[in-house]
Length: 118
Image (cartoon, rainbow, N blue to C red):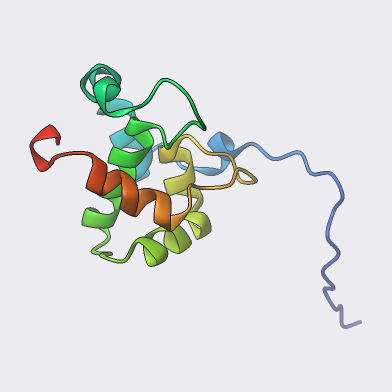
C-alpha cells in the first residue's frame, strides 16, 4: 500500500539542538575553540547604561565571522542564512525558536564599533 506523508505542525516539540549537530561539524568545533569573553571588556565603553539591550558583542562578532566564512556581504542575507542553518544557530548560542537580531541592528552595531576593535 502506498503511503503519503502529510505535515502536521506540533504544538509542543521536544528538540535539543546540540543533539542534532554532529560532533565533527565545522561550526561546532569552531565554537569549542574560540574564546571571545574578552570582547565584553573591550566593547563595554561603546554601550550606554540605560535603554534597551543591544546585540551581544560575542554574537555580533560570530555573525561577522559567519558572513566572512560563508561569503555573505548583505546583513539581510546573513540573518536569513543563519536562521535556516541549525549548526550556525548552535554556534551563535541561539535555540531553534530564538529570534536572531534584526539586520538593521547588525548594521548599526558595525558602525558603532571601530575596525581596530576586531
